[in-house]
Length: 184
Image 1 (spheres, one colour):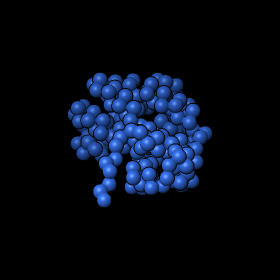
Image 2 (cartoon, rainbow, N blue to C red):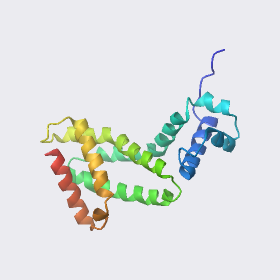
Image 3 (cartoon, helix red, strand yellow):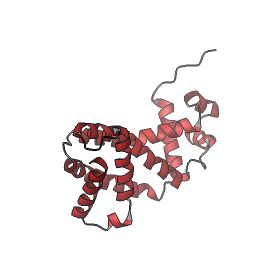
Image 4 (spheres, rainbow, N blue to C red):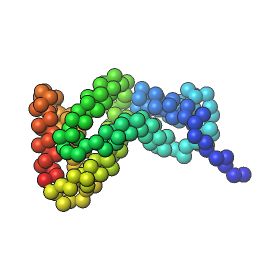
């Protein structure tokens, strides 16, 4: 007997949203498929109708969580003609995302935090790559490599204690200097 087509929405979305809540509260390892399905009010077989594995579900949860954030970022990047534009655009987005993250932080297991952080950087990489190609930078390394260096390097910088002690103009200068060292 052939499987029924898996449709978007409905029970599938309910499972994704319930899994997101449980992953945030308990972490990936401590959240079982049975836990998710008990919360949804469905059987294990229903889970496997929609998802091949818990890993697949987790990937969908992370994707759903960042979709809106990524779309805002990509739209804003279209207006960046210079590095200064990028820093001015990034600063409020970063501040808002950290504000949102701080609200969730106490409820999110470290494994989920780590996956979300990496997922964010990887999701933003194509947009940064396009920007680097648009700018015609001095460093002739592959733009995908440069995009990764910029994103992961900036992430390490902006999450450091020293950076967070800087005033806004110091932060802007620090970011511009860093980007310059990579791209020139």
